[in-house]
Length: 91
Image 1 (cartoon, rainbow, N blue to C red):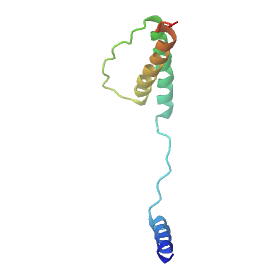
Image 2: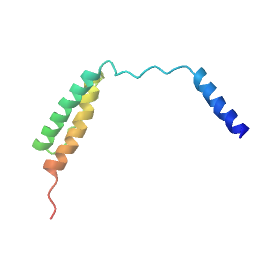
Image 3: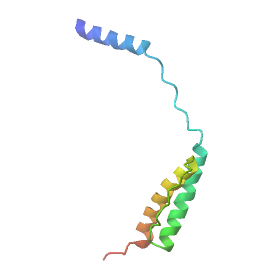
Image 4: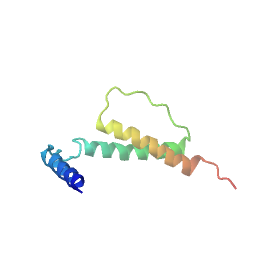
């Protein structure tokens, strides 16, 4: 019983002495990332509807929040469009 109390007291002291973690804030470019994701998803969906072949992406040297969002959105949009438009319906 005494050891258990000591353990609890030790944990409380450790928590009290530990530095407080800073609050997590949204990244500075959050709006750009979301807009890039939306644009990429729409473009990927359209590409799947028209071509059914995923284009090869050229590597971009300027990685911004918008381009990262666009890339992620394009991949997910194409995958969703491929399921909707390109797969043959199986009986």
